[in-house]
Amino acid sequence: MLAPVTEVHYGEEELLRLNIASSELYPSFVDELEGATGLSCGYEPSGTLIVARDADDDRELDDIFEFQRSLGLKVERLRGDACRELEPGLTSRARGGILAPDDHRIDPAALVRALHKACAAAGVEFVPERVQRVERGRVVTENGRHDADAIVVAAGAHSSRIEIPKEVTIPIRPVKGQLVMLRGAAPATRHNIRGLDAYLVSRSDGRVVLGATMEERGFETTVTGEGVFELLRAAYEFVPGILELEFEGAVSGLRPASPDNAPLIGRSEIDGIFLATGHFRNGVLLAPVTGEALAKLVTGGSDERVAPFSPQRFAAR
Image (cartoon, rainbow, N blue to C red; front, side, top):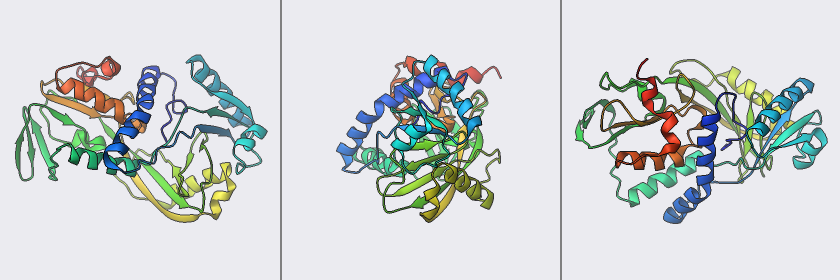
């Protein structure tokens, strides 16, 4: 789910601007990738519908809607019957909703396959070796050393586990998230559907993704019965028919979270070492703008869009 509008949180206005900037890059980003590789990235400009399950949810949506409008975001407040007209599979108990038409979605696995193929065609050399440490001008792996004028640490939740010069601060922690995958004969919904504590994303081939738990469990990635149950229950409260779909599986992953929940994009405290990590809930969404910004920075340029997210904001800590 690529959802800069419905993922906005209080106090994250600067991050919202970056999310929107990256979202606006997505159509051309996908066109370029698909044209270069012949592979589909599964991109769909679907929009997101936030649904209130009861009166308490609906009152909270009032606050969210006013906050979104105060930021100039394109949103529409809907009654329950209008939500069901957009999505006939919604529960009859739905009290209201917020429609964000500019949110969209993509298949992350398909996107990675296309990126890998495009990079290989462009001459990128992949070195499938585990990194042991980063030094000034050098990456040390389990099998050797690789000199480099510029090094980008982009290891997600594992970024802080890489041995690195003590001058460089990488305050990243893992936040576990579990997902459930279902499958039907056709898309379960036209829009992304989300509530206050879960979401449902349908794909054109009938796959449905339910997500995602938010767990402070360190690097533990076990799929649990509790996690699967909570996601199925939450999705059932929006779209009861999802229980008739085929259960395809469940997975667990780690989000890279920083102390202020914003990414670290840019130069570190050491010349030649850059960071692109800490994207938390927005890693896939921020891929295009992060790539553009790092390309400029490692070649000596600048990018004002990522200036508020300099890794050096944590240096004094």
